[in-house]
Image (cartoon, rainbow, N blue to C red; front, side, top):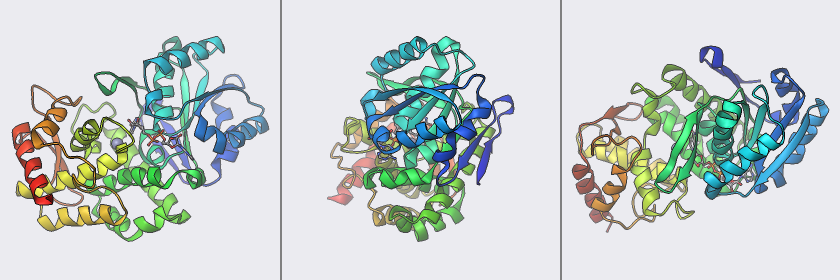
Length: 370
Ligand SMILES: NC(=O)c1ccc[n+]([C@@H]2O[C@H](COP(=O)([O-])OP(=O)(O)OC[C@H]3O[C@@H](n4cnc5c(N)ncnc54)[C@H](O)[C@@H]3O)[C@@H](O)[C@H]2O)c1
Ligand SMILES: [Zn+2]
């Protein structure tokens, strides 16, 4: 069974990646528990598809459980649900030594993780990610957050899970569009520092999306290993190492803001277009070859992901898109560090370029697309 350890000293934990691991969740969780009880939090879609299997697995290991089912969707990741969830955990009698189980995608994982970081000043939590995005990215690394009026993920905490159980078989029920959006984050690991993995994606991405179980398992394990390595080196993003995971995200956030964080453009879709734009920006700045930038855009297009402004459904001009970037969490003194690249697998953090330059670039992209 592929098991990857996120090495963080006393806060180290395992990520188990195995088709069917959901059915063994009780046995894997039991050793972490002081008393045999867990609260389980999920959303309605995931509950319909996968909650019975998890509850049966807990029953089989004699672990009692209480369940809270929330509404699916990004709106759940806000103050109202955070308050309700945290009050619910207290009402269930949660103690610091207990572990809350988050069964679902990044929305459930981020919300539950944040609540676990504050209830009784912090209790344990276990991630059981059920989207590709959550399995390759959000369930690992301990970033938890909610959205507030001023922006996405603006309020949160670093709080590492005690265990992550990623069951690729749960992806069988995930809508194709969510699957493709999560795949963008897989490609990201190749583009950051692993050109050979980008080559693998170019050859196997379509099969992965069409249901190839071996390709899915390989991509998840490879992505988690990359994320574990990056998080272990720079847990709190105080160096320029973890920041590389934001490749495509600064451009992407501008696109998400322009589409009002709605289902017109999913997070992973915005990241896909953002990665293509970051490579194109780097090519125009003379940092990376035009052919590498074209290869990135072509692969994203081939798997049906947005790869420019038009395919992202964004009509805004460069100035207004750049203005969204100024509100990025990472913005400092009017400048936003960009993740740029010297070629596929050679990403780096750059503070060389101001938002004026980015605005001109985006207007150029827009005119070329007309
Ligand atoms: N913490 C981090 O490091 C990190 C990293 C990346 C993204 N995120 C956050 O993750 C969130 C996006 O996560 P997501 O893409 O997983 O979205 P999501 O949690 O909203 O899930 C997408 C949709 O799929 C449904 N679903 C989930 N699993 C399913 C399954 N197996 N079968 C059928 N339907 C299923 C959900 O109900 C939802 O409708 C964003 O809020 C983003 O900010 C966090
Ligand atoms: Zn992301």
